[in-house]
Length: 497
Image 1 (cartoon, rainbow, N blue to C red):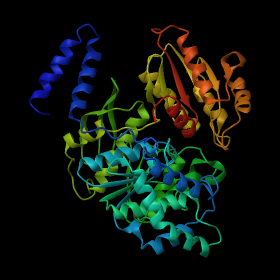
Image 2 (image 1 turned 90 degrees about the vertical axis):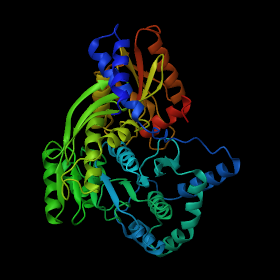
Image 3 (image 1 turned 45 degrees about the horizontal axis):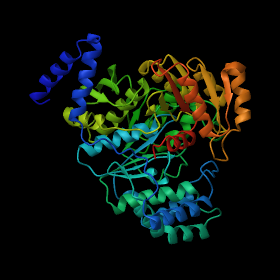
Image 4 (image 1 turned 180 degrees about the horizontal axis):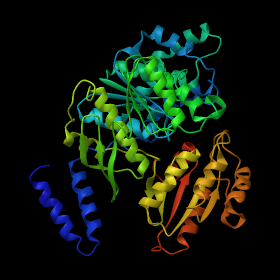
């Protein structure tokens, strides 16, 4: 810290004499740490292009992509994406990569890794999915979504090669495969110093798995996509372990025992080095702070204290520990060097992190929070984060889910914290019908706590009205959750896109 910062800290504490002393110190810590941060990561949810011609061109690309297999229709193979990489000249080999798999926390962890690498003056490319509102969010350069013009240009550049591969394969390239090709091409064209790549689903046969990442990250594994990946954590881990390449370093978040055993076995088979959360790295301490939390993290090279993370929930603290270890491994810390990275740079990076749709506050009075939890594990983490970080006297849930998820498990995770639930549905064909969702909700919550509003705008209005019934100062809130799509559409309706 600079010499002026302790004085600023003391001034803030002194100014808070009418508050609980511990809370005053925590707030002072978060505020002084925030002043050290660089420019926060962009909101990462761009609006439609202002230029009508660019918007028209982007819509044409979106329509073209929509004619391909969607992300839920899969043929487990990397043959098509391999063929595309071949005709494009292997762009994915033009830069080192960090590859991220797991069930929950992948996108937030990717954003943190991106921020850390950027703080150390590396040019980054990040590929994540699904998007919250705009398809351009999926491909980022230097911490910001690729501009619409560049997205269109990239698509048009690779389109002839995509059509060439389509003609030679049994099945056309899918929506996700084309986007993956676009991302790898855009990163090579930039060019980037490092790519941060999140799998779409699984690992072994995921379209992203044509990279040979020097660092493989495995966020917590739980049950999701069980019809495609397996019905136990061990079966799911066997598929996700496909991202672990020979000689790589594996950053392993806390896992179910059977999943961890599968990952460790794969690492031994390919002579990969493993760093385990709770053993080689982890969260030393955390405190709730205004606008997020204050952390002390133990990395591969040593301890990093006084880190302000502007995200809520214990799960985000664990994501931060994983991200830090991944970046240390990328720089050779731990295996090749026994040292810590510059702590001020680490603090600056974490203080700049944003993760839209992850316990994101988008309105006050009443407070409306968005969270993209879509499976029971994610819902439990969301519920814990809400309980810890928000002092709601009464919480109204707005829930719209996909039909192919463990909806009952998700509802049961939220039941203890929702006073009432407004069930709805988003605009996609995958959405569970509101009446079907209501029937399940009644079984979990009881008839008196369930409101049905098939239109999302009506559902938001109903929930806000219910929250306002306790009066402006009563502390009621609204949590919108159940699907990334539901959260993205709610974000637009609430004027955040």
